Length: 282
Ligand code: NAD
Image (cartoon, rainbow, N blue to C red):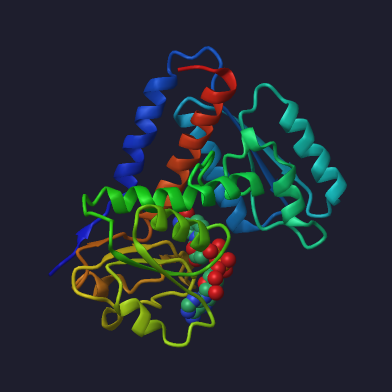
C-alpha cells in the first residue's frame, strides 16, 4: 500500500477562501492581535505567517512586538488593553514567553471571548466538557485533516505521541469525543513502538525527526505528523519517517504542507467565529 497524501496546504486554502468570501461584505473586519515577546527566530516566523494570512484573507491584523525584558505586569497591561479594544476580536500571545513571565497568568488574563488560541482555562475546561468555545488551532487542524480522509473514527484506536497542553492533550480529548479509543504516549512511555503498532490513527507531536518508523506502523494507519524540526541544512523535518511510513499508511501528512497550514487556517476560523459572536454578525 502506498499512502494517499493529506494535503494540508490545499485543505487550508479552501477553508481560508471560504472565510474570505463570508467576510468580504463585512464593514468591520475580524481583528486579530498577535503579541510577540522577544526575538525568538521561530516565533518571529510563526507570528509573521499568521499576520500575512490575516491580511491576505481580509482580516484586520495588529502585530505587537515587545522587548524580551518586559515585566509580567507590563505584559498583563498590554493584554488588558487588547481585551478592551473593539477592533480586536482575537488575541494570540505567541509562546514560549521569557522566564520572568508566568505563561499561565498571561493566558488566563486573555478575555475568554477573544481566546482564539484556546489556551485559557475556561476554553480548555469547556473542551473537556465537550462544549468547546475555542478549540486550540493545531488540534482542531489535526481533527479536520483526519475527518477529511472520510474514514470512520468511531471505535478506532488512536495513539498520540506527545502530551503537551497545546497539542497532545487537546488532541486526545477531541479524539475521545469522536469515540476513538485513545492512548497518549510521552517521554516516559516504556515501549513506544509496541503502543504505536496498535494504532489505526497516529498523531505524532514530539519534535524528534523521524521518530516514527515504518516498523512501528500498522498497515493502513492514518498518520498525522505535527512535528517540525529545522535541520542543519534549513529544511523542516517531521516526527515521521515519511518515505518509509508512506509504504504502509493509508493516509499521511507531509512536512511541510500538512498540519502547519491547517494551524493557520484554524486560527483564522477561530478569529472569524470570535468576531461573529462579539459583533453578533451572521
Ligand atoms: P513539547 O516539547 O511541549 O512536547 C513534546 C512532547 O513529546 C512531550 O509531551 C514529551 O513527553 C514527548 N516526547 C519527548 N520525547 C519523546 C519520545 N522519545 N517518545 C515519546 N514522546 C516523547 O512540544 P509541542 O509544543 O507539543 O510540539 C511538538 C512538535 O510539534 C514540535 O516539533 C513543534 O514544533 C510541533 N508543532 C507544530 C505545529 C504546527 O502547526 N505544525 C504546532 C505546534 C507544534
